[in-house]
Length: 249
Image (tube, rainbow, N blue to C red):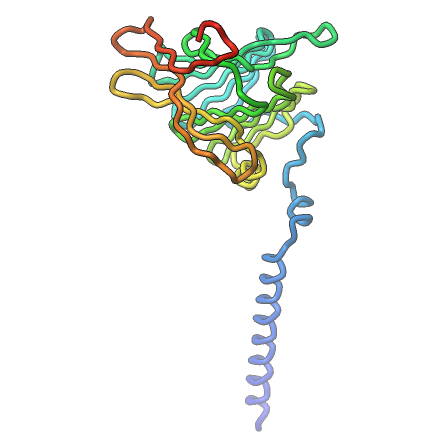
């Protein structure tokens, strides 16, 4: 074997070795553990550490409100001063869902959001300590309370790649991202509880429950009409839900 052949053979060996090293590095990087993902920035909730508002989430400090605009025209307004959460939509001006109710703890008024109204008509009270609302565009707000009629302790908003989490025990926005790598993982770790949506129909808007998820991944699907409003008569509100805890539903 002459000197030229030896050089070519050596170069081929080195190239093959480099390719093998690169492949090994790729395999190692794709097999990272959950702990390594956590170290790389997986959200740690419950810290009460404030983060900046991003994406479609904004805060009006003077009015003490937090607003979120969904990708498809929905709107969430958390009025912390008046302890009420309002859901509206750009496609139907005469429609709103209100989650309200408060309790006083140590002289401080807190939002329980356990009462639910459609266009100011009290339809029902929350059935458990978790309540989710899914918008027609797929955005979702999940509210978690300390108990059936207790204060809200957290609010999470999922919308495509956007995820925002508010810790209400310390009134702190703990996570806010317009393009989170962890949106689905965060959604999958939190049960939705009693879950509802609203549907635009030919005659108006139907407000209804669609499933219950008390345990993550175990959804019990059941359509239960709650209330309805009509294009022909904006003042007409049909209450379909008989809540035995209330005398006027």
